[in-house]
Length: 253
Length: 253
DNA sequence: GTCTATACACAGATAGAC
DNA sequence: GTCTATCTGTGTATAGAC
Image 1: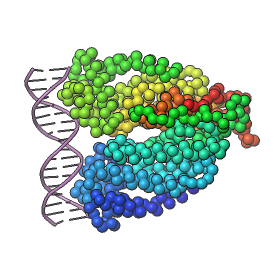
Image 2: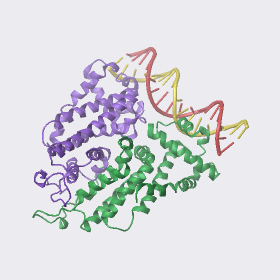
Image 3: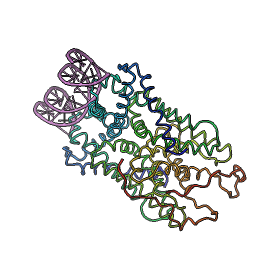
Image 4: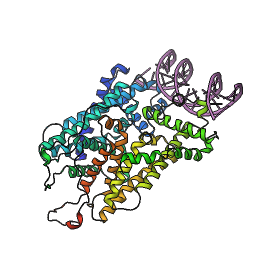
């Protein structure tokens, strides 16, 4: 699946996204007319992401948001109960969409090699389309409340685990060389983050998301490619030496 | 050079760092006694980084800073003219130290392969020691004023260029395979950033900076290693001169 | 140099008219 | 549903005593 095809698929579910946001936050939304609410929720969310990406969520004032949406401060508070509430709403909304897309496109069958390529591509594609949200989510995680922050971190680790599992599968299929897969998964994720965190840089250099994806995939595959000839020593596929040394807990930093 | 050796070297220049901060910001510092100023500047800078890393610079109040340093709000303003001024001071201070360290340890002579390993290691080592500053600098760049922000971004691109140059050199030495070096340099930098941005994760997993460095180096070298056997099509150079100097990686843990 | 007390600006949030 | 006007808390920064 190439990017433009993927984009069409995601664009189609935008309406549905805000309907879901509406119904899942009705507790805090005073507006009852769904059509109105959906329309304004979209305005509010987009504006909040836009402003936050420029100056940070905390620095965004309700007056900023009011100006950008064309709604008065009073009206805004009909859609959320507090600024903190809006932050949580934004986080949950994006996370739900991302998870849905990933589950639909990445999960399930196929060889490890295929899955790896798909997972990288789909991650990059979705982060390209939802760049403002990804950037926002990354930057504002530490400003969330205790509970919401934990959820956000778990969700990040889930992504990492998805790559970890693919690498493990590849090793057992004997198409990926044994490595410290946990560390590799973390590195892969960081490279995917680079795409949406430094979006401006790649725009300036005219690097497309597909070019970037190809490069990343080639990078990973080179590291995991099984050498054709081993020097005499120990056989990699039977050795335990490449397992992560200790996954047990340490202190929190 | 291993990490603990490097640490000793950097620790030694801490006093000097704050003296420099003092003299370079005298315009905004009302305190004239150098000894007092240096002592308090250190307290202030460390406290500001600590609080900012937890909740963001903007969310840090002068009352927070006052509590953490043990100095009153009034006293704090004897060391900087405004909160924004303090932000700039922190950014400049760290950047100067980082640049000095990199120039001293990375620049100059050696094969591309050696330089690559050194550059990765030194970057990781310095970011390990100055983790709070690196994290802070990354997260707060967008909150800087126009002029300071530009400087910060330039400094980031400088780092990227350093890796770019090494890769170019490696290609011309025929020990690195021809690739999109600009893209690779960006990816390398993102992987180095991962280390200080997600420090807590690696602490929890008991991954040391040296383990991480080895893994990263192996990753890059795998991608840049010149294949021993080429399939028929035209290839950039013959296999004789393509001996990568170290194939000894692989066993993490 | 450092303190306490305070000014004053601005942000988040609400009330009540339309 | 949305507006304008306004309350109240909090944050930066300063004044002036010690």
